[in-house]
Image (cartoon, rainbow, N blue to C red; front, side, top):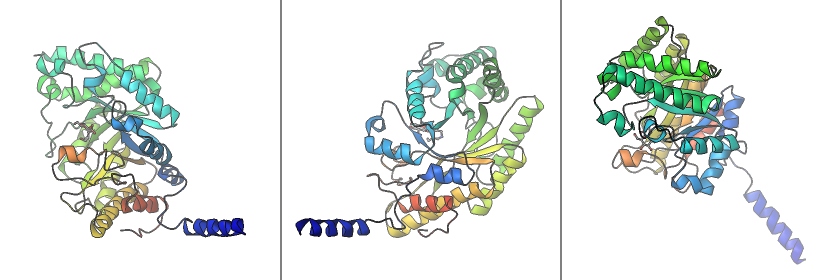
Length: 360
Ligand code: 9MR
């Protein structure tokens, strides 16, 4: 009798716990995206050497939901070449091992950027020729070490101001515009030398998700590369947006189409949608954020296969870079800081299933 009651109670609790519309899908976002012809739904992860590295609850979601991993820091110049011609790939290799264990693709990030460059680069006075040699050595050694483990490289990162002119960096200030073309040329040569020419070459930037001057400038640089016989395969649209100010579906679709029409692949590489101010977790705030995520993912679905997929710049509010960069801002990701899926997560899931948004 007791066991009958116990079984009845157990069955009742199972019915109550049965999946409802707000349960996370059993297959995860990556499988849903692949079901729609995308290559992945991915996430950045700041691993190794951080709290994430040993956070088993975090890692479980990372593994289950995402099929691409971008190292948030491990492959950047200051970590891979801390002193001139002294390379340290320990952290990068550890990241790659995690990605291999999870059978995730990796977008390698990044080779040439104004930020997170080693002191030896920024504190020396170089001639243009000397700095070109430094850049070439860095690109060759790094690209050849990781080889085909990278799906792609962000060869140059964030080179432009919002008006489309080159922004100041040790690279631009010393070498001039030519640095941009040389970086791609060196990456292409380095890969060819090891038979890894399938590794894709990308330009990655923010503020290029909306039609305008900066997008035109990127398309101009792509033309210039190709005129020189240098390969570029795709453009990474970082997509760091603000809730309520996210570019419209029409604008996001039009911009992605402009790149695709220029024979480029497109990836949403760093999606997050932050609140400019509290409250982050009120119902209205969450619904608006869900709508903005839905729009951003939907734009990649609407333009077809050459938008390869979406990558979020980490997936939970606890590990998001936003609060440390923008005082008073946050709540930017798909999961809250105790790893519960937010309406934004369900909006993404619904977009990937071709459903209307019920949480927007
Ligand atoms: O997520 C990265 C954070 O941990 C670093 O402190 C920061 C340093 O600038 O870089 C963050 O990643 C950036 C990425 O490399 C390029 N696009 C903007 C990202 C957020 O700042």
